[in-house]
Length: 233
Image 1: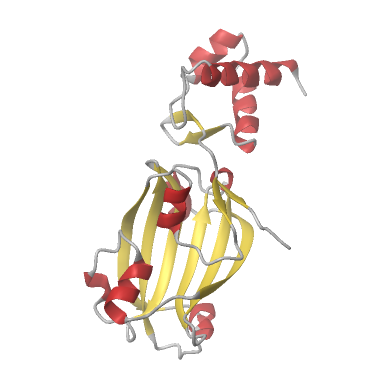
Image 2 (image 1 turned 180 degrees about the vertical axis):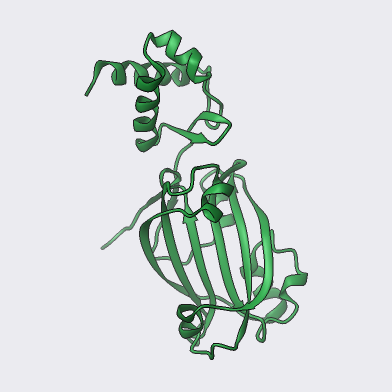
């Protein structure tokens, strides 16, 4: 471990420890930090990239470096409600709808629903935020036949609650698949990172009590914004 890296880490930890910087606060500009630490900007950038991997800082395109908050903790073996989990962990969760459209979908989606390729679905694209920081882009696919006029609702809230309150559909359990993936532009850009940057892809198949697939849901997470926690007995 290089002495420059240790100095960079110690300096930022000191800024946080003495209260000059808090979670989601912007770090001084790279040029200013490099001058303070008497290192080149290349050395500084390398150190900051390593600190991002440790979850101490994060970067957003054209905005700079920020102090990273605590990671969002998820148990992949349990049904996930993003908004309520965020509240329980002390975050303020918000959602921005990127787009809603009705379309036929690719083979893996209609096969999961055990439907024909001509079946039409709502595709709902959203960005999820924690304390105003974009952390996840989500795509949800739901049958337009089962949920007519779904697009008329305020989809910046809880889709689970919309289904429950207006269609009497309760999602009771999920199956999920988690993979590391390089994020394509349509997922990276809303998160403020470069296309091709690593992320976490979580596929959720969300069912009702009769084992009927309700929601084919794909999440693309900033990798350092989330951690998994599983308890066994």
